[in-house]
Length: 602
Image 1 (tube, helix red, strand yellow):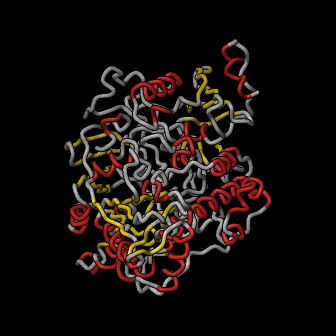
Image 2: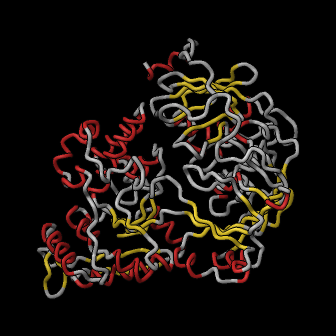
Image 3: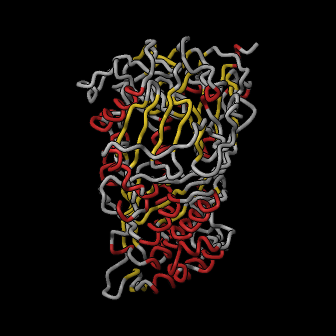
């Protein structure tokens, strides 16, 4: 019936019946907060607004329009930025950081949709206004979708692909009906990941051009001033329409926000030390352990905070390009993955700060580690379950630990055995196939840290006659080669959430294997993986969803498509002592949009 919906609509027949208006929508299950909720649990509703904060970022900008192709490398942070909060432009709904994937009313105060999610209606808040005082209308929503489709960059340009039709309903509502390219996640993506732009204040003809003209937005801040490439200063809009709606109570607490731009990370940190920047998120364990010996830390003017989110670890690794014949055999990939001595690298390069990553959704209910495959998973896996490592299937799989010597003989012996199963033996000191061709490949790196890891890996591989060369390239070359899959091995990160969705098709789906610019860096095309992704996308209940992701996790682990590296189970942030935050840390970790200036609280 769903595939007929566009035809019925075009024929002038009625839309599918929707349920009563909802204050929130969850990807799976029910929203945690009731319709009469007053604020998100991780926001401080009584915080006094005022003061200022200075953020720092590495990069530059030459445009205040982050939605066009020309802005992809030079981004004006804050215009549309979930880390700092959407300061100028807003989506239809606000995501809660304390639930896996649940949206609450923002520009749209409620939604209506059918059980199949084949149609959704957004009912706009009648109080929603642009910064120039004009109301936000359904015409703005439709205008935005069409403009971004025609002139926006990816992914904004693809928003209408699953949409069969849009229609204005009454004075304050807009309805979308979806085609067969949609899935159950897409209505949420549409609601939270698409900015709404003012039709009356947008120059369509010049939209694709870089511009520093001050835009009109619906968000809590306006651009006050800017220095191209160096600084953007935002000021609170005292007439912000949404300051009292529940999804915004306790947010947007500063009167003034500045975003300072720096060309290098070390320059940004030096600016933080000097008090030019107020907050410094730190992702390096060695830097976190060694770099904070300056006076402001000792006298309490700078405070180091550690947060523990309850989200999956994600996966970082040396990714094998299986489009290359040398990586076609899973035994070879497993052997090469096993050869990396994580324990040596962790001890000698990172002061033991990291934990080995063994699952794409480690530290969450979505991980297959420690959980035997249940009947739901077995049904998804089908006959492929018979080819899986039994330890992966029963949940006992773990990566063997080395003695941290950089050349554990027991581990290397197993590596050689696996390579033999893949057709390689050591001949004249070189690992070679039956025709005498040596096992060799290139590792492409982008940063000094990646290069250090690659050198450690190279050293161990050399012990068993495998020749790995290392090529460190600049950002432009790295992006160009990774986008066209022109590499043997590459270092990539796969962030994970508690609600993985359509992005997985671009990472591991067969349709993305040969699509240049996709994130299918490993070149995977496996019908069982496709089936697991489809089961994940079509799941209705949380139980079905978790089973699908665990089955998917097992397939990715068993495929040995990369060398799993490491993660830190904590978030590290250094801040000036006058910057404060609420007591509760939500599911996804610290949230800068609810932090505040303590100097105005008394």
